[in-house]
Length: 136
Image (cartoon, rainbow, N blue to C red; front, top):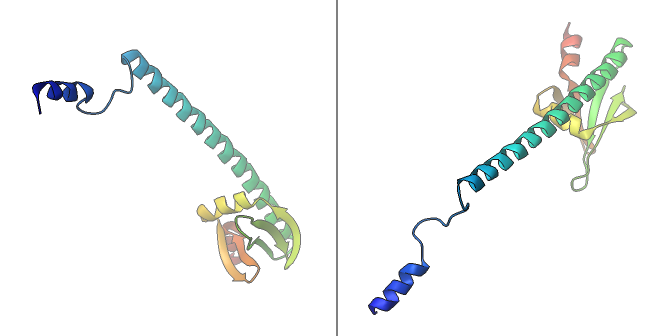
């Protein structure tokens, strides 16, 4: 190797990571854009959680209504093909109405929906409050 090739090789390669930003202003602009995107995601998540909370209260109202009439209420999540799932409210073992499957998954993660049993067609759950009310 000659000195000329060494100079060419060194001039083409840079030590460390290549620059992402031309100057401090570009870096600050990118930071503000990332911050704004994070705020938008937080707002969307908050809106989704508020909708789920409203639907949780509506579901609790339905369950309470039927329990006051002395009926057994369960929430059934049917086994689906692929990603398709279907959730329903059953009163005394019979279909009453559908409910939001996403809401049911959310309540399962919050440990509000308690699994009671399962069969070939799906899993059955009851609300945590309904367990407490039946014990009292």
